[in-house]
Amino acid sequence: MTVKIARNSGFCFGVKRAIKIALDAAKNKKDIVTLGPIIHNHQMVTKLENEGIYKVDKPAEINGRPTIIRSHGVEKEIMDLLEKNGIEIINATCPYVSKTQQVAKELHEKGFQVLIMGDQDHPEVIALRSYVEGDAIVVNNASELLNKKFKKIGVISQTTKHINDLEEIVKVLVSRCEELYVVNTICNATAVRQNSTTNLAKESDLMIVIGGKNSSNTKMLAKICRKFVETYHIETESEIDEKWFKAKKNIGITAGASTPDWVIVEVFNKINKCMGNNIEVDDINDIPGFKEE
Amino acid sequence: MTVKIARNSGFCFGVKRAIKIALDAAKNKKDIVTLGPIIHNHQMVTKLENEGIYKVDKPAEINGRPTIIRSHGVEKEIMDLLEKNGIEIINATCPYVSKTQQVAKELHEKGFQVLIMGDQDHPEVIALRSYVEGDAIVVNNASELLNKKFKKIGVISQTTKHINDLEEIVKVLVSRCEELYVVNTICNATAVRQNSTTNLAKESDLMIVIGGKNSSNTKMLAKICRKFVETYHIETESEIDEKWFKAKKNIGITAGASTPDWVIVEVFNKINKCMGNNIEVDDINDIPGFKEE
Image (tube, rainbow over all chains, first blue to last red; front, side, top):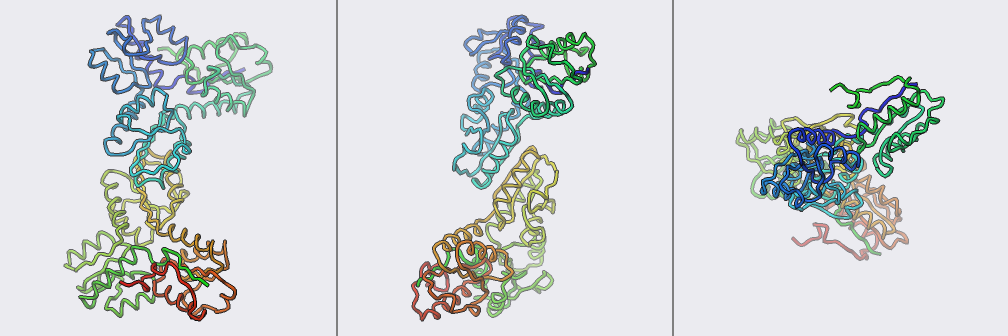
């Protein structure tokens, strides 16, 4: 039996980077905070607490401690406030998100009505909006545009959205404005993860999908896998049933964007144990837990 | 019986304006030339010759005479050449075309790869291209883009093209570039003419469509009319058959973009004559031949 882990499983580049920045900072300092959780994963929050990195929800709770800005970024006003109060800022904003903030600012300064494709309640969008002095239209899809017309419109996207929705919005805008400036700020991590998962599902006879049962990106991975092969969606290794693997030759593992690497490793080890530590592995270097650092 | 002439029939704003500029110039000067025909209509060319306005095909044939630039515009190099040779330029370039040339130039200067949606052999596109030092991609539709990718692409259109094709091209480009700047340079004269014709066809029991038998925009008008009502496509009043009007109550007239107003007026008069000069008219002020100037 072979077990393969889909490339690009789990955390995206921006989240991995933010965690590394946080852990590096904790080597030299004790009692630092993140403004909001670095990722919505309970185990990760606990792991960071063990390193002296605590989550706070508002600037008022910082109490002068060094503050990590998570990958989603934060409102410009909060950044200004922290600076004004002399707080040490450890900026772990994803570089793709920072770029989107910069693009939003520039479009606004050039006189474009900024349109953000995204969820208006998502922290990334809330932060983004602050870079255009709040003067942004936020929609999730073309139908929300109704019949609005524009002179100069500048379109950007929350980094985790789908290109197809952006295409539809842009198509609708062509006849609704005089000038249309689109900067494709979608990060392709989601698309790349789905593609890798699809490829692995096609060559496997069983897929294990790891991630929160309510995580929409994980559910999408499971849905994709089920098109091709028998699939189990689990949160941790404890849910694994040995019977699943009977008469199976090629097992595939993939994981949603909020699944830490070590959870993937635990699943891998459990499968290995079920099989009497007798499986061949492939692409194992994609899992940092297996890497020699 | 009533006869209505569809609003926006015949020449578009830019062509009407160019002819007016030419005729006004001919009031004070004799022996002036147009570089290329003002419009592809034999009768109009003859009419202008009677006023002392002659068509030449190349700068070498100008021989020092005042020169009218027609509504399509002309290559920048030719404009520069005429100026250098001290030729008096009577610029009748359609303002919408001039604006498109300006936009092309600006996009090029800002580092965008300019993409023109249009026919590469059309005079307007040939002229437009010269404003980006020849560095433009010209396509008629999305399929011609193949799999090309771009960093910064600026999209404009030949003024007479269809918005739907522009929408398709822009949609395809969203995922193929980092920055996409679209300036909608489509003039809505064609769409407006088709809409007016559709509306008139719906309330008429006979439609007369005037324009060249090979004119694609006129054929499109006839096709639209036939969806709703009995339709005849003619070039001049001489083709009219009195029998067509038997038992008809509401006659509609429309005309393609290269049909001079007086041809429309002649058709109108012939129908009136067929009916014993006994028809009610409507919207007649849209026809300059009927207007008090």
